Every structure is written in structure tokens, then in C-alpha cells.
Amino acid sequence: MKSTDLESTFPCSDGNDTVSSSGSEGVILQTGVQRVEAVAKTWTRKALYVAYAGIFLMAFCTSVDIQVTSLLAFYATSSFSSHSLLSTVGVVGSVLMAVVQPPMAKVADVFGRTEAFAISMLLYILGYIQMAASENISTYASAQIFYAAGSTGLRILQQIFIADTSDLLNRALLSSLPDTPFLITVWVGPEIAEHFTTGPWRWGYAIWAIITPVLSLPLFISLWVNQRKAAEAGLLPEYPWKSRGVTNFLKSLWTELDVMGVLLLVAAFSLLLVPLTLGGQAVGKWKNPSIIAAIVIGGVCLILFPLWEMWKKAAPTPLLTLRLFKNRTVIAGCVLGFFYFMAYYLSLQPYFYSYLMVARNTSSKAAGHITLTFSFTATVSSVVISLVIKYTKHYKYCMIGGILIYMLGIGLMLRYRNINASNAQVIWTQIIVGIGGGMLNVPAQLGVQAASLHQEVAAATALFLTIVSIGGAVGSAVSGAIWSHNIQNKLMLYLPETAKENMTLIYGSAITATSYPMGSPERTAIIRSYDETMRILLIVAVCVCIPMLPAGLCMTNYKLDEVDQRVEGVVFGSSGKKGARSDSGTAEVERKE
Image 1 (spheres, rainbow, N blue to C red):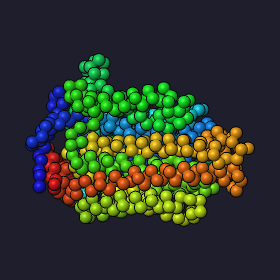
Image 2: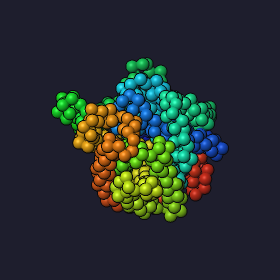
Image 3: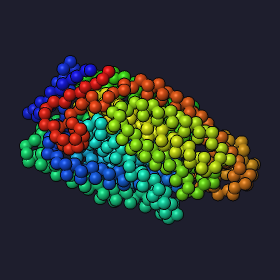
Image 4: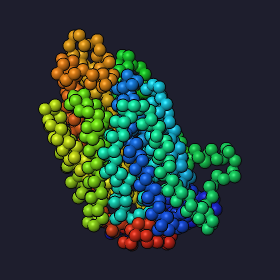
């Protein structure tokens, strides 16, 4: 048994409070962290319940919007005659969702949780307004910048807030709270989406810029009221750059937010992954100078990023806490999450919906229900597993079981991919994959958090979710490269001579592909092209699943009731009682190695 006592000084006059730990280097508490600790001391149980109700309502809205807009993307890209760029849009979104999480966690640490929520909501609204108003694929894709930053910020801040207000035994269950709306919205989403597919699809984006902010008010009001209470009690620290002038303010932000680290990370993954989906369509294909230059510059930025982060003089508050990479459980958990989401984007997204409609002639509603079965079963599975973890006090056994079930489900998707399989068989594969996904994702995140000091939980959560999103971006990029290369070649090979002149239209629009009647030579050729390409994607997905098992086995099997991460203020589960208060200035972390 190893114990580390952390003593915190709160607050210092210069705004830089430090937490010293026995046998470890000091950890700088940034102003936002100090502010959330101050607000935590003013929480009442009633206010905490209101805040969690607000999180549920916000999650409900974002759950519906994701499921509606993910189906509308099929029609939006096709209306621009750019269906083949669906994965490119997905890569842009995935890359941004990955790289936005560490800086958004940093914003929460620098400015505070309330301020970070407000910034994220503003970006979310701007993203949907631009998507609704877009007239071409370029505008639609660029809107992903605002949307990805906003929606990802909201999601990671929900998890950070839950980590701030819960102990480890209850955290798995509470971390599943933002996912529980899927139990309802998985059935509502396709119904709403179908309404917009037969009418103005743009309103399917615009309505969320109105509904989500309104239903998020309980959370914002609860945070704002308790922040005001902390200020009135004299607990709320001032920002260190206040009254120091614009120049010092900008210098402080540059350092505190690690702007250079953000730019290097964004450039690295954007320039490496996006060209993978565009290379097959560019003039000269992979020999195109722009494609080559983008990949080379992206590789250079990827090399420079860790070097910059390790340069303490230039990056005193790095984007990612590098010492987390020295922890075996953190590394293994991130590797597991990477391949989990990469396999997901090779099998279930972004082309499975198109495959169902074109190759299996499934209606848009039925295809929506089938693709969203994963979300439903994964949510049920994660809630059940969270309860099991709460009472067994171990996470690893559930996670390993989830990995095996997830691998089985992906394998069965390959087995029942062909058009002769029944819809029931296809649905069962989605159920199995969903059960496995729910069993492994939440425990993996919990394991990474359990391996971290309390002051590092936000950074550890951001790191895990970042690596998971990067895995999704890589999966989306690879699937896009496979899809764009194979569909074009196979359509040219199988289409009748009379239809080959329409190959570009068929390739660019899934709606055009479905316009050919079932049984016609054209539709038969299209189905064969889709079926053979989907087979390749699923074979790659099965291979990608293999590293998940050794990664999961490398994670430490913590006994969660022996990992004590005390959070000041009213929290769920402290000392085994919901709403217990701990006013001590220490945080003790005990780990069973």
C-alpha cells in the first residue's frame, strides 16, 4: 500500500498556489482550479442536485442533436454532390474533437468551470448556425471547427464537473449520466431526422442553437449562483493577470493556455489525417505536391509537439501533463481507448448507414434504428457495469470482458455483412458490439482517473478522451481512404458500359445510388461494390481490435475503495455517504500496486 499526502496552500496573493506532495514535485494550481475548490465549499446538496439535473438536460439535447445531425450529414453532403467527402468531414470533426479537449480542460483550469461552459456553449451555437446556413461543402466542413470545439467542450466539462463532485466508487455510475439520454433518444433521433430529410434539412441543424442553451440553464444558473456565493464569502481568488494591462494579459494567456502546444497538436493531426481521405481524389492522387507537403509538415509538427511540451521554460503549464505518460495504467488505458474508437470508425461509422441504405435497400428510418442500436445497448451496458463496479470495487474484470465481447461483435459484423443476412442478424451484431463497448469504455476511463492524483484528474480525463478521439479520427481517415479508393475502382469495374458515364454521380451521392431499382444491372453492380468495400473495412476493424486485449491486461486492477481522492465540498459518495463534506486541505491517494 502506497500513500501520498498532498497539502495545498489556498490562495496565495500572487495567484500561483502550489500543492506539495511527499516525494513528488510541486503541482501548480491554476486560478480556475482554485475557483472550483472555492465554489465547492459553497455547494449544498440541493444545488448539486440541480446542477446534475442540468447536466442531464444538456446531455439529452446533445444526444438528440448528435443522432439527428449524424443522419442528416448523409443528405447534406449529398445535396452538395459530395457524399464521398463524408469521411473527410468526419475526420475534420474527429481531429478537432481530439485536439480541443486538452485546451478546453486548460481553459477550465485557467478561467474556471462556469466560464469554460459558457465559452463552449457559444462555440456550439455558432457551429450549428453556420451548418444550417452553409451553401457548399467547404462552408459545411468549416462549421465543424466551431461545432466540434463547442460540443466537445461541453462533453469534457461534464466529465470534469462529475470528477470534481464525486468519489471513485460512484464516479463510474455518475460518468454514465450524460449517456443515459441515449436510452430514449436512440428511438427519437431517427424519427426527428426523417422529418427533416423530407423537408428543409437545414432546420435539423438550426433548432439545436435554440433548444440546447435553453435546457442547459439549470446547470449554468446553479454554477453561477454558487460562484457568487463563494465570491461573497471571500473565497473566490482573483485572476492573477487582472489590472496588469493588455500586454501582460495576452502573455499570461499564451503561457497558461499553452497556445503553441495547441497549434502544434492541431496542425499535426489535421495535416496528417485529412489528406488520407483526400489523396485518392486529388489531381495526381498521392503524388500531388499539396498532399505530400501536408503530410510532411504534419509529421514535423507531431515531432515538435512533445519537444515543446518538455521545454519547461517555454511551456511551464503544458497542454498535456507529461508525467502521466510515465504511468503504465494511463498509457495502457489510452492505447485501449485509441484502438476501441478506431475500430468503431472502421465498422459502424461513417459508411455503415450508407451501406445499409444502398446495399441492403433499408429505409432511412430502419437504417437509423440499426446504426443507433449500438448507442442504446452501450448505454444500458455502461450503466449496469457501473453498478457492478460500485459494489465489486474493481473495474478491470468488467473491462476485459467488454473487450472480448466487443471483438466478438466486430467479427460477427464481418460474418453477417453480406446481403443474404437478415436484418435481425445485423441488429444482433450491433447489440453485441454495443454491450462490449459499454463494458470497456467507462471502466477504462475510470482506471486512468484512478491512476492519477486528484490535481491531475482533469488532465488525465482530457488525455484519455483526446487519445480516444484521435483513434476515431485515424479510423475515419483510414475508412475514408479505403472507401474512396475501392468504391471508385469497383464501380468502374462492375457497372454496365451504359452506366459508367454516371460513375462520378453514383460515387458522389448515395441518393443517386439508391435511385436505381433493386435487381437492375446498375444497382447490382453498386451493391457488389459497396459489399466488397465494406468487407475490407470490417477486416481492418477486426485486426485493429487485437491490441485492445494486451493493453487492457496491462492496466492495474485498483481496489477503488482504497483509492481515496478527497474532494473539498459536497460530493457524491464521500466516506460512503452521498453529500458528505470534507473541509480538510489534504487529499490522500492510496493505491494498491
